[in-house]
Length: 271
Image (cartoon, rainbow, N blue to C red):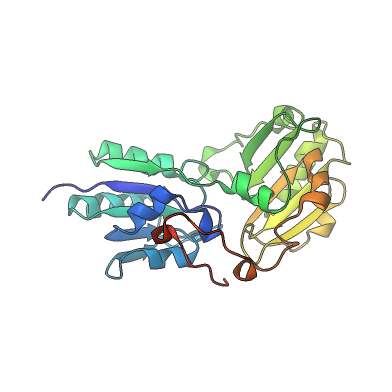
């Protein structure tokens, strides 16, 4: 039996309409779908009814499957000739461990294709009305993980350099480490008056945004649970004028954008 291809597919940040055309194409031909916790479950309905679906979600403090086991599943199913879609939230190569999975596949001689996805680092701020760059306010941005691998020993994020090196900082997976991140930024020169936005469940109907400054955001966000994207920088001030998503009707009640090809449409329902 011929070895099948594994597709590492970015599912986008939550809104199912943000899945790419290529992602939808391979998902509809999948025989095995191994999916993550932040993948919108609506997307699973786009896979064939007889496709094997395997949950491989991760949450801080607990994983349904260790990464090594996920790698083994990808390889094993591909060697059985099954078309495998590894469906990952956001983009597979942006803090999605897609690089590790691609390395494992390459080492095992398994053909694979990376289908990029819309990263939450860009889409979630956009849905909150926050452009990461803006002429006169921000000419640079950086995307940082707030949850580093504990096996690495010393933290790899050099906050002393990063704190003032770019105009806008986007922190993914930082809800639980926000106090340390704020302390690091303040200790290394970022102004206490720097605007901050914390966006939970961005691009979905459950989207919640809390704004403040480095001086008061910890008090305002006490108890906020993941998933959260943090945006730090002057561009946050634009949200008051540009908050198009949460100022409009619910997703299901807005006029849908009609695709040119009806076969590409995904039905949006309430989460």
